[in-house]
Length: 138
Image (cartoon, rainbow, N blue to C red; front, side, top):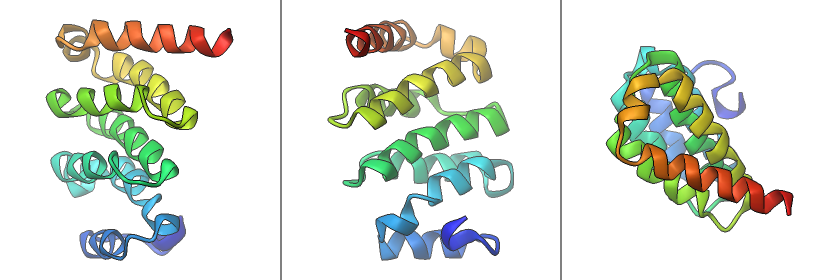
């Protein structure tokens, strides 16, 4: 997968991030999210959180998706950090990032179950996702 086709290490993920080539960086949140049990959920989430603010649309979308992968692979995610990032993604200027955020909300409902349901932002996120989806259908 991109710069990680021969495997990945913490060091080469950090090297890709330092280089900041969007065509390579876009792979980082997917790699760390899918491998969060090996690299550490908190480390992986930190990478995804940082990239959720990246200027490149695909990097931002993949960063939000990476949070979903962490939830799926670890059943652990700091929702106090993740949900505000997902909320910002729902309002992103790019529709592809908004759509990814809506999908991630559905994943978090499944993989984080009660933790998501009980979080103070959960209801607002679900309502916002429904209203933005309805706006897409109009």
